[in-house]
Length: 379
Image (cartoon, rainbow, N blue to C red; front, side, top):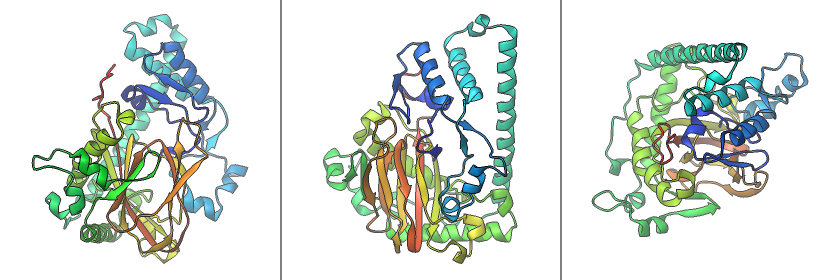
């Protein structure tokens, strides 16, 4: 996820892709049809709560983060410090203004313009740094040979899932209702992938982890989430899951979340949780955890697929959606009944992976969103 459950998910692309902004802290809702001042007030109020900042080595926060539980369950992000996030607030507000008003900066004075220019240049430098890292990781994975070439849907999907589509590939709503199980308000589970395909996917993931170790590129690939499907040359699987599952099912079941928009961006990866992480041969590659703290995702809709269910504990605890006032309310503890079983939920649904007590937990996660403005309110 993008952060701890109490952190407002506020990014300019997110703002431009959604008609409604949700505050994760006080439940405030601001629509894009409200005036600029309302958005500025929202940005300001939310950004006053927390600021990204690296902790000092001798701080209490740093010491607290060294506990085993926090290391095992932490999300890949900077810790938060309770002070105003001036840079974040300034850049977001300015970006929105520049997009809306052609002569926006003519209202400013030169020191203010130069301050914005300086902040944007720092952000651009960070973007270029991340781009360089992306290219390094892409080059490091080029030599990997993927045994799972593009497969037809019938070799990937569970036959029960395939039956919800007619001969023309159109979703049959009557069949969809029979397939889905509502685990809690706004979270639906269903059989999606064939168990034998799940096993083949896990074998491919193991091969990729071995490749990373043998090539000595583990440091380049990083340890946060190296088993990214695109890096494993499985872009076809990402696309198939988006086009044949998440998009049609979400449009039918989550119209209020998508507002008739089309999901056009996806990021898929394989995640692992071990009861005893040090027993894993690929610990330095997959960076397995024993649990994952409560969080939301960098997505509008998230698909979570079980790849192996021979473990104890490790349930997915589901809480209310960010911005509804139910963030602290646990709604369900979900565990897939068999490999290939999927859970589809909004990215703003609070969730956590509970402690794995025995065995190994593997899952395929697909984050999706409307990233190119293909929603009906394009600004």
